Amino acid sequence: MEAACNPVPSCLIWLSDQVTHLQSADHITTVSGLSTMKLRYTQIFVIFCLPFQVSAIGLLLNNRTYDYFMSGNHSEEFNLICEVFDNVGNETLIWYRGSSQVNVSQDNSINSSCIRVFPLSHEDNEESFTCLLKSNTSMKLSLQMDVKFDPILTAENNMTVELEKTVQLSCHFKANPQATMSWLKNGISAPIGPRFAQYLGSDVFQLTITKAESTDAGNYTCQAVTNNGTFTTKITLIVVAKKAVLPIEAIAAAVVVGALIILFGMFARRNEIFKSVNLFLLRYTLNISRNSVAESGSVAQTQ
Image (tube, rainbow, N blue to C red):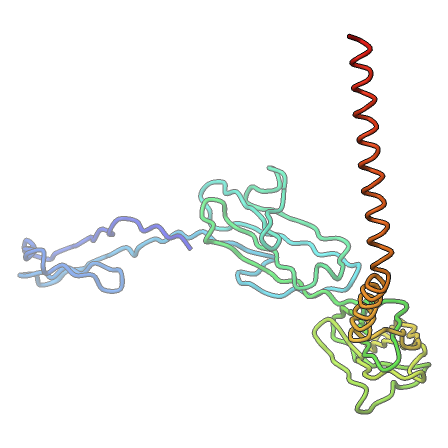
């Protein structure tokens, strides 16, 4: 808050019979904002001192001078009114939603400003609005929204897991006020036991099934209960047989055996392979010789 003080007030003194003699300046003191002057050689005197006049500028947010929470229901509207009081000249007001400035017209920002939030949604819950004085941004008031809304549930429609594998069903939710959460399987409470574990976070509700069995297949329901009713979303879980997968050791052994078979086959037929190679080289040499003779004959005829 800004404050401005006027000069020290003047004192009016009436004396009965003698002239007033003021002592040195160190005898002038200030007590509770009033100047008191010690006088000598006075019999009767009257002192009138005028108090300081203080002018202060302030803000009102929906007729409040402090930060507060504002509650409302989904689809309703909020009207936020910010006003300046005790100002000498015109003052400009600015708004922020969270960390983002709200655009308002010039006419809607001088001395008084109003913004409307409509319709309220779950995204507005816990959002803050702040009104600031442009000439002194340290002067501000804020309100935080408390928007009531029914649970909003989202989840995958279908999930598949192999036998003896682990699967995690996740249900993401938002609600204000908080809802009572539970899992159902085929319309009744989900199984409990060492293979089943439930986890409830601030915005996710999970059911983890380890070492899945064929009997675990079915329709799972994520259920949220509030005073306004029951809200659900469903997940269909399918359990399939394990895929046949060759172990790495078997694949490595097959590769080694195949390579050995090829090497042994080549070794057993080494004589035939050598004969084929020699025959190929002989034919290649003869072809080169024939081509050389033919080229020599052509040169001789030309000469």
